Image (cartoon, rainbow, N blue to C red; front, side, top):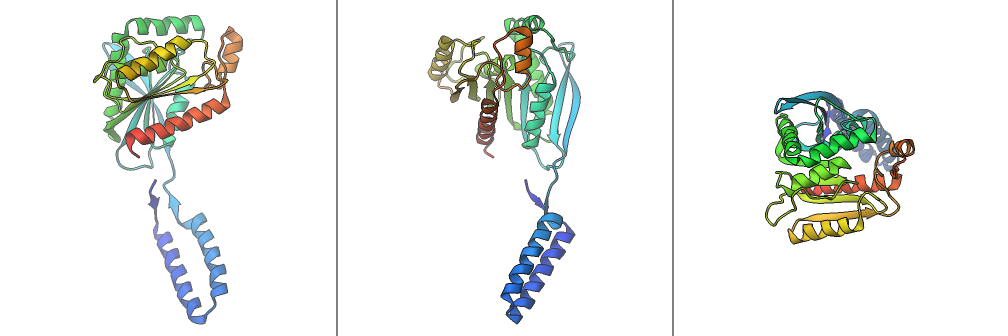
Length: 296
C-alpha cells in the first residue's frame, strides 16, 4: 500500500527539521537524539499513516441462462486504482460462510474477490447426500458449470476497480475441480489454485490450450484422491506442457483448510479434518502464487 501523508504529517516533519537545525548549531547531539526518537514515535502514532483498510462485503446478483446467482463480492475500498480479481469457487456444500471468508481474506490482501454461486439462487446443502447430488450434476454437465463460471467471471470483470487482464480463480474441494477443469479448457485466467480438489479431467489438457498457471495444494492423506490419480494428473500436465506446481502436505486429509471439517467429519462419518499447519502453509503458497502471476 502507498503511504498517505496529511497536512499534520508535513507540519510535524518540518518541526523535526527545525529542531535538528537548532540543536546542531548548539552542538547538543545527545539531546537531539532523544528528541528525534520521541518525535519519530509521535509521527508513527499520530502523524504518518497508511490508508486504513475498509473491506466492503456485499451480496450481489448476476444471471445466466435464466438463472439468478447470488455471489459475494469483497474488496478494500481504501485502495485506489484497478486491481486483480480473484474468483472463489465453493466446496460441494455451496456458497456458504466459509467461501465468503476466503473472499474477504483475499480482499484484505488487496484483491477484488468474488465468491461464486455455482448452484444458483444461493442454494446450499446441509447433508453430504444433497451436496454430492448438486456437485455431481454439474460435473456431469460441465458445459453448464462452465457457463456459470464464465458468467461469474464476466460479472467480476465488470466491476470498475478490476483489472480485466488480471483474473485468477481458486477453488476448494468441488471448487478445486471446477477451476482445474476451467484451466484445462482454456479459460482466460492468469492462474488457478485448487485446495484439496478433485483432479479428474472432464477434458484432458492439451498443448497450447491451457493459458493459466496451475497450483494444486493437496493433503497427502486425502483418501478421496487416489495415488494413481495424482500421477495421472502430473503426467497430463507435463505432456500438455502446462506451468504447474503440485504441493502435498504430510498428515493432511481432505478439507484440511476448513475449521468446520472436524465437526462435519464426526457428524457424517467422513474422512475429513482441519489441519492448521497445512491451512497456513497452503494460504502462504497461494499468496506467493498470486504475487507471481500478477507480477506484484
